[in-house]
Image (cartoon, rainbow, N blue to C red; front, side):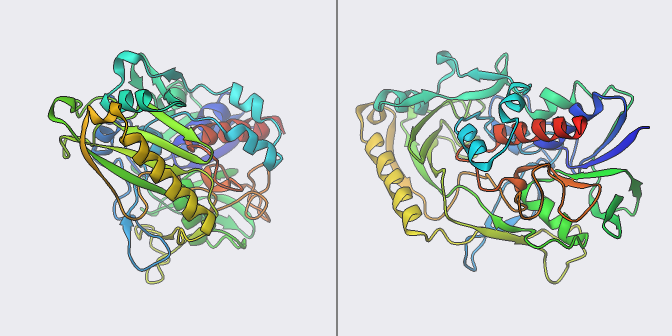
Length: 414
C-alpha cells in the first residue's frame, strides 16, 4: 500500500522531506509551494537573490512589542529562505539537541547532503579581512557552497528527487487550509479552491506561516503561534573608503566572531542600492524574548492576509546588557588598525534588524510531540523551525536540515 503525503512548503525543510520520503517507493509525495520554482540562486551575493521576483513574502511586517512595524524577510519559492540567506552553517546546535532530549541527532546530521565549504582566503572581502586581522577568535565562515556557488536545500535535495515517479512538485500555489475530518487530516484546500487528498499532511511553511496555516485551519491545540523567537540584533553600518569598496555582486559574508552568546558577522557590501556601504551584524544567540504569531482579526479566513507577528520587546535585563556588550565589542573591533585602513566611519542602528531566524512558534512538547505530530490529531505533522523548543544558539539553516532529516527517518522507520 502506498502512503500519500502532502508537504506544505518547499523551503529548507520541505525539500529535505520530499527527497527522503520519496526515496521509498511505498510513499508518494506532493510538495506544494506558494512561490516560484528555482530562480535567483546563481549569484555569489544573497542580496542579489533577495531581489529575484517573488522570492520574498510581500507585505510581511512585524512588531517588537510596540505599535511600530518593520519589514521582515522570509524566503518564498523552492528552497525558501535557504535560497535567499547567507547560507552560513554555524555550529552550537548539537549541545542544544542534547538539552532538548532528542535522540538520533548525530545520525541525522551525518545524513545531511548540504555541502560545507570554508570561504577561501582569495574570496574574502574587505570587511572579512579587517575582522580577521583585528581580533583573536575571528574565523572564516563555513557556507553551503559547491564550486563557489551558493547551494540551497532545493539544490541539495529536491533537484535529485524531482525526476522520481512518486514525486510531484507544485509551485505558485497558495494553501488556504488543512482539511480535517474531525481530528484526522485528510488533505489541503488551495486558495484557488482545489482540494488535494492525502494520508499525511506535513506543514513546513516556516515559523511564521505554519502557525498561521494551522490557526486558519481551525486546529484546536493550545499554544499555536505562542513562543515565537528570533535573535535580537543590531546593525553597525560602515562607510567604506573608496578604494576598499567590494563588488556588489560578490560574497556578502565571509567571516564571523563568536564570544559566548554574542556573534558578529560581516557584510562586505550592502548590494547595488548602497554603494560604498558595508556592515557588521551583532547578534545575541541566546535570548529570553518571546512573541507570537496570529491572524489578522479583520481577515482571519483570508490566506492572502499576512499573519500578525509580534516578537515581543527586547526588554529582559540580561538580553539588553549582553547585546549592548556585543555592540561595544564591535566598536572596539572597529577602532583597530585593520579597520582604520578600510572604513571612514560607522553608525549603530536603532532597533532590531539583520537576522531573520524566526523559530519556536509551534514548539515540541506543546503543539507537537517529539515525532513532529500535532498533538491530538492524526495524519498531521509540523517539520520546520517552528517546532524547536527554544531558538537554537546558532543560525537556523543547519538545525532545520537536521530536524527534517531526523523526522523523515522516524517516519520511514516507524
